[in-house]
Amino acid sequence: MPDLILRNATLPDGRTGQDIAIEKGRITAVEPGITAEAAEVIDAQGNLVTPPFVDPHFHMDATLSLGLPRMNVSGTLLEGIALWGELRPTLTKEALIERAVRYCDLAVSKGLLAVRSHVDTSDPRLVTVEALLEVREIVSPYLDLQLVAFPQDGLYRNPEGEAALIRALDMGVEIVGGIPHFERTMAEGQRSVETLCRLAAERGLRVDMHCDETDDPMSRHIETLAAETIRHGLQGRVAGSHLTSMHSMDNYYVSKLLPLMAEAQVAAIPNPLINIMLQGRHDTYPKRRGLTRVPQMLEMGIDVGFGQDCVLDPWYSMGTGDLLDVAHMALHATQLGSQDDKRALFDCVTVNSARIMGLEGYGLAPGCRADMVILQANDPAEAIRLRPNRLKVIRAGKVIAEIAPEITTLSLAGRPETLDPAAYAPRNVTG
Ligand code: FE2
Image: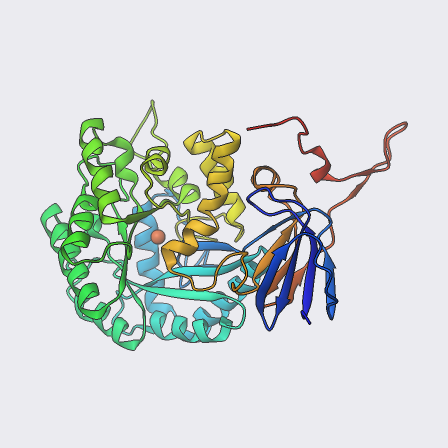
């Protein structure tokens, strides 16, 4: 007998009236009209039921530190890095854990149950690494946390950068990070990519680098990253985060670069909220949007997963833990506005990122872990438009967060007494 049956779900692929049976934390059936009895039944009432949101790019060691020790006045990436450098020596393991775990509460409430976080390895004390390894354990019953060893101050620019990064991997951090555009020279950036890919290949690890997060069209480390991926046989295990310089690159050059990325199966992880804020700071007008070439990448079959990057930290004073905010910004910044585009963008905050992170048992098929979210919306396009309530968040078949549907009471003469935001879904939209 199933432990739980979730009835009358609409799935992201458009199937309606679906029942989902769950036993021992796993999905056992997805079909209409399951007749079995279950210990617990949840009526999804035709709402969208999706696998959880996934954030493939975050900084959990910095989150919720906004205002410490001061605010970022210029709002630039470089002042953010400098500010973080001021804060870093004062960080304690206890405070890092407290902030990170508190952030994970927020994430869960938004149906975000898997996060890849970069961990700064620049301070040789590695208190950030110690803290986040502990956080990974604490939150593991409800949130999958992957950690990337991230040399924020550069692998070579910081004299202790390489040794500290290797120590972080030895301690149990599972992904190799980098920041080639922040090394002193293009050549050192290239050398850092070569070193880090070799390191990952030797240890059988994945790679996820901050790569070309600049407006400089000559910042071309993604090319080296793709080539090194092929050289070391790391296809399908490497991601380039940000890749904003590609926005400003010459079209002819990009016509060669994107097929190279596709050949290397290098995924792209743009971060639309943060990069719409940080990029284009040297521009007057026209002013660049600073987002990488998402539509072209999707056309080429390159895996794209959107990250949040920052919530309330030295780089970004906004953020809610809601990946639908990210998809909403991505839609506007990329001008991907058709109904098909919206479904593709929804994938960029769910299934694509799960694939990029190599998450096991993710999805809404029999055999998958019973992790899912009921949204107060009818379909993925409406979910991006409304960024609605997560009515129930389910982890391994158990409800771990819930909220009542948002229904506003109106007092308007001659008008209905209540307003349900989801009731505004357009009824005549096709395609
Ligand atoms: Fe980042």
